[in-house]
Length: 358
Ligand SMILES: O=C(O)C(=O)C[C@]1(C(=O)O)C=C[C@@H](O)C=C1
Image 1 (cartoon, rainbow, N blue to C red):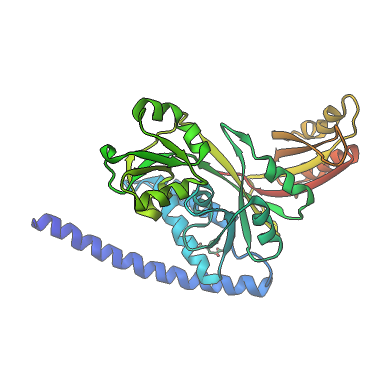
Image 2: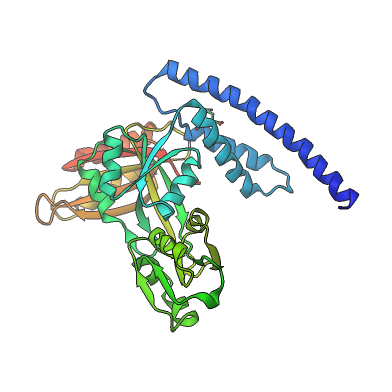
């Protein structure tokens, strides 16, 4: 080994020792913060997204490199996730199984030190949080190619849970196998949606290889662990968790494929200054009712970022609308607009004000 190389490694060891010492020093303050939070309100969430956002932003702005700014987020995601686990366990229920895109969205929001509870249905995610078995729940709400997840919208009708946050997760599919050698592949497994999203790539690159549908991309990965002639189309997280080698990365036909997830909770997060509010409402069945109803948002200068409608399931041709606006319900103009909207509709429910994804 050259002296230069050895010298730089010694320097890195010295710096890493300092980083470790500083992390432990930081952890002492985190533990004290945890105690103070519990003294102030024993029932409140320890997780504080507003503070996390401020830390990400402050450090990203301050970074002069060469350490990549994007990586600051990933590193601090894990530092704060581990720190929070010192304050208390963070239980997060999500639509499983492990290694799916919902799991990746969870990791993006809560890091790898949270306690994850994979469950079998969107309904089960809601019920885990409603019964207090999980602090948070994570469910998909819409996908750029497949549209809105109706089942999630429908669940809000009878649930008292609030939206605590949102996560945007890129849906990138990889072809992976035990050996990582393309020539070994005799069959491909994946979830029907993932297969559909990679149709052109499969027809062009593996035209004679049979493709079998299984219950999830994670199940496909599991099958490929035991069968060296099998390959799975699955997430990067699946390749890590199942020890598979990526043969070809990003085989999805549309590279602009994102899924938006909602974080559910019994309690509201703190205001951050960059928030969104989601509302659910229904209108009388008469000409111009929806137009009248939405006017207060415009007159108070509020940007409506989304509107979805669903049949109410209570009365034929009666619809429930799900509306997202920019702003927090504690802001005067948002409060006023919501009051005006409420007076014009059959019913209105505020599903939550929460930090907009950044
Ligand atoms: O500042 C807090 O409230 C903390 O709990 C500390 C800390 C951190 O590690 O910086 C940890 C988790 C929170 O979600 C936000 C920040």
